[in-house]
Structures are given as C-alpha cells and as structure tokens.
Image 1 (spheres, one colour):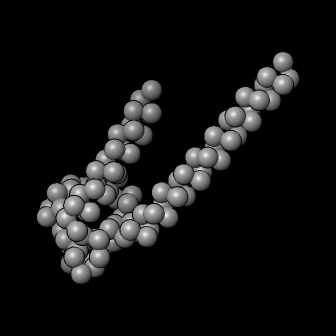
Image 2 (cartoon, rainbow, N blue to C red; image 1 turned 90 degrees about the vertical axis):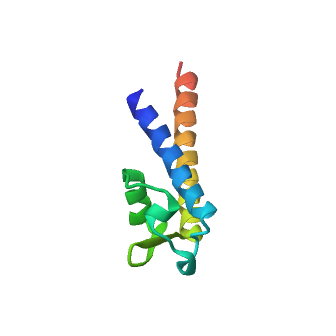
Length: 99
C-alpha cells in the first residue's frame, strides 16, 4: 500500500505545482518566474517535470510551464493507463473463460 500512497501523493503534488504556475501566469518565457515567486520548493516531482521539459528554464533561475508539453505528457500517461487497463481486463476475461 505504501507504493500506491506515494503515487497518489506525487500525483497531487504534480497537480499543485502545475496549478501554482498557472495561478502566477508563468506559462511563457516572457512571464517566467523563480520557484520562490511561484511558491514551489524543490522536490522529486518538480525535478521530473523539469527533466521532461514541462517546466522550462526561461533565464537565470526563472522557469515557466510549457502547456503543450504538459498536455502531451498527460495524454501519453492516459494512453499508457488505458493500455494497462485493457491488459488487466483481458487477463481477467481469460481467467474466467478458462475456468
């Protein structure tokens, strides 16, 4: 259960970070702000978003949210989730068919 709890906490933190960037209008290089101005602290989730190009450096210690990259990230995650769900359902169906 600890793994599921951590996944949920990371998902909530990710949403919180994205919301803070949007609330501070830090969504283009022209409006990039520091993490301190936006109100986010260093975390593994923030590092992941930065590594994936969702949070982008806009200058010297200022960052912005790349909405297009975030949309692609969410669509990819949804796609892979649906594929995993399909396989789980297929395994359940095979189990009941072979019973």
